[in-house]
Length: 149
Image: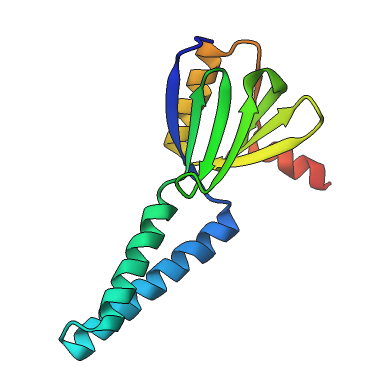
């Protein structure tokens, strides 16, 4: 892989946490809307709710996966929570039928990340082209059902 290559993909939060996070954002937004329609004037609560909704949306949309200098940089909430994984530690990447991508590391650790379908396809194509040493596996939804039996 090129030492100076920089690629960025948009990450999603873990599905259950994502539902909770965006539900809180929508709850605050509609509370803001109700306060604005009921009071019909600017007041401190309206300004506070506007700032709070703006901050939550700003940080919620800022989760990224960057590939830079032969390492994966997982950055959640615009850099509040970071995780660096050198590409030479990744031995296998499994792509599920849904949004989950599992990174199997050398120390028998597994890191789960979540990408939307478009970014998952871009990530797969990028790794296939630029990181031939990493084993890429596509998990079929029927594989998961066979484990249940």
